[in-house]
Image (tube, rainbow, N blue to C red; front, top):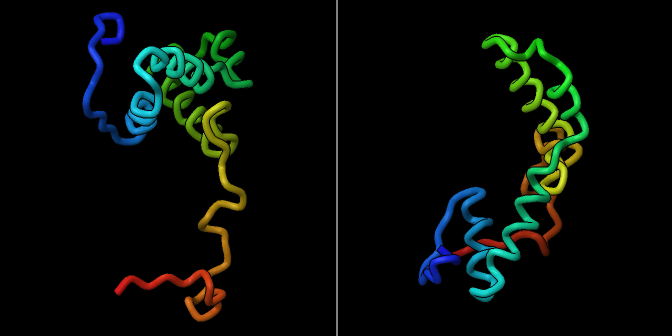
Length: 112
């Protein structure tokens, strides 16, 4: 679109599309593509475990490919995606349960 000199009036997106939309809407038309490139190059960088995908020929079958995909998803859960996100530690489900009465008063906001 930028090469054809077409510039959107509205941008909407969900999930990664919302991040793309923010980069598009938050930059001048002449710099949008220049801002998108480093973002995508950063989040699609090869992770530290990528060497195994290049050297392991066992993951060519369906079952092995499914296992490898699950393995990579588990690594992303534990280690994050370099250049994109890191997991919150400890994960939210391991935080102690508290009641609203134990929260400091200044953190309570009630809409009426």
